[in-house]
Image 1: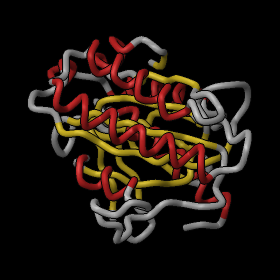
Image 2: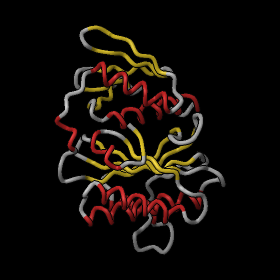
Image 3: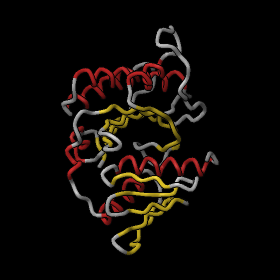
Image 4: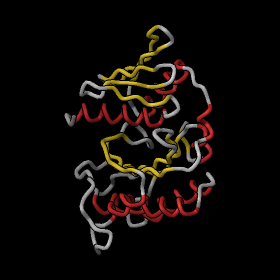
Length: 241
């Protein structure tokens, strides 16, 4: 489900890379994402948008986080609301969480996230956990998504709730989260991680959003669902709800 092989993205997995500490962080992120997107056969214009955007995120990670924060590059696919490529830069420093600002694209300084906002379909940041190295490592991830003109190849696949629940437990376990799984009746399964209950239904993952509503994601968007769960658990642990 996770590796440095871009072909795994085509079947619902994630592509993960460590990024070097120091000023070469942005250059490494650019080269890695260009290779991944090129291997996936994505259009040149979209590749350039992705490369420029990830360069800004990696540069921010180097410039604005504590030394030794240990940056990582994550890439996966998302099917809803439209087909997208999701690109995240993770590091272990939570002292500053980036937010959309008022920087102008013509400004000499402070325009990095304005560039990302201009090029990407969406972007954001949240608490998370590292996906590489030994043991759970709390931190933050800053991400953006790029819209694709065609669906991912796996969108026609039918996944059973039992298999989706088992894979979700495995992915969360790899992040250091102890998750339980049990049958809930009627072909529905329940995955519990921390205080969060995730119902795995015939077509979707669903859980309470904490405000009386429910979040629903397609079973095909396993990587997204796992990241949502990790975020909720980390925010609960930190008291940031």
